Amino acid sequence: MSKRILVTYFSATGTTEAVAERLAKAIGADLTEIEPAEPYTAADVNWRDTASRSSVEHKHREMRPALAKPIDVQPYDVVFVGYPLWWETAPRVVRTFLESEDWTGKTIVTFATSGSSTRGADGVQLHDSAPAAHWVAGRRLAANVKESELAKWVASLNL
Image (cartoon, rainbow, N blue to C red; front, side, top):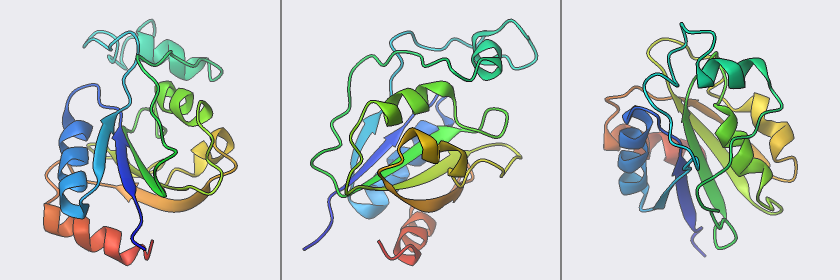
């Protein structure tokens, strides 16, 4: 029996979206965006502004931005969760998604995009948002990662 795989992603600037699209194509998976009810603007993700939306969400770890629509993970065995690294962790909207689903019997693999940081890409800091899941350590992926590299990485995970 082959596993049903879903690639989900949150992308504020398009970088993570492009990687997620290549990943889904490389492994023959379905693709769904983790879409916040209120989209992020360029000003929202200005990490230099302590009053920006992303800065405020980072400071208040309990914040959970609403989703535009739920994502049904039930038909899938494996779910990849992609996000940009903000302060070496996933944006809060990713936790909203993780905490809104039943992960019993599911495997989660994270992937993250970042210009420099690698801390937070493995997803360890997210485990408490989906404790019922089987977590497989993820990794940082370069914005220009090739489909062939993605396919090789996923094959090495032995899912």
